[in-house]
Length: 274
Image (cartoon, rainbow, N blue to C red; front, side, top):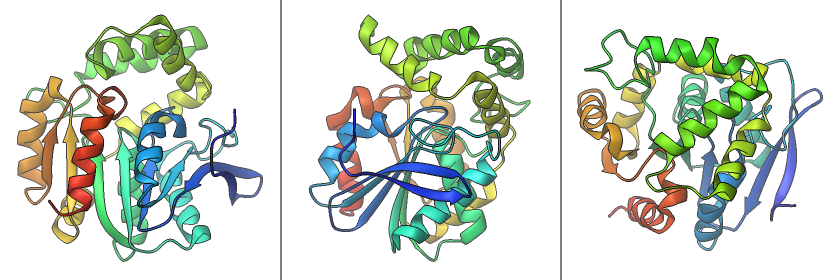
């Protein structure tokens, strides 16, 4: 299956990223989360490309992009994002990150600053995923649970399937998934082999972009969209760290997929300054 507007951009010798580039207008760049692909944003790409130039990126070792043993970390992903924006000569971009895709955006800001950024949309990701104080800080989970995910599930393909299936059913959505939907979500993740997924997981969990998040929210309009299941902690954390950020609460971790119309309205209102 080909995606409308699909093309490849070389970011390192022999390493190409697949991107979807459709529509015209102010550029809107989407970054998917851990092991996911351009396809999760299909509803957003179709909707916003009517008014915007929409770019959706498969990070390296994700989806249709080159599988490589090199650069499977968010520092490199930030550099890759910068190269894509350079090649496409994009100016005054709105960057939209989901989950670990937010880490890519914060890393890009760390490397390049905010000169070329019009606004930011950060979907359901803390800038510091781990803390010993998991009851107060917005984190991915207790340290023991995170350790188990890394040491038990991301050791082989079977474990990766089980991890993503459990996460999809219990965290990503709020309704019961059909077998077809669940299989599709799991297959999205399995395009990234488990040994690369483990590297990305560790890189993401040990990241700390609180400074970048704070400085960015003070400089450009920022929208933070938070899932309902951890909203109480996450909203408090976000208000303390980035009080200038607009906050919306919606659905589960994959709210833009499950509640596409509501999410698109939230994003459209933000882009229009409402």
